[in-house]
Image (cartoon, rainbow, N blue to C red):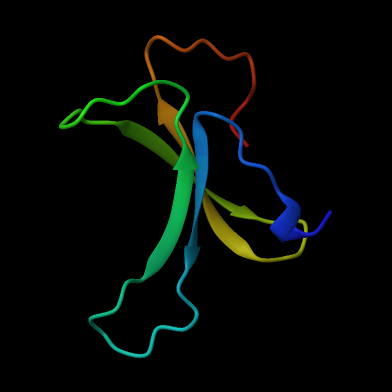
Length: 77
């Protein structure tokens, strides 16, 4: 499976290093997450982050949202 075909599960996300950073003022990382619940404006959303390597060999930071109401039996990444 190619990295571009990866499907992010609810409550998880990823961040990648900005390999095209041309100026110090540009962002260091970019990414996204898929919410596993409705998030209210102004609500603080806590998460855990893990250093990972994709099947294609690309390093990234995996994100797992911390939702006290969501019980998952899945281990983090």
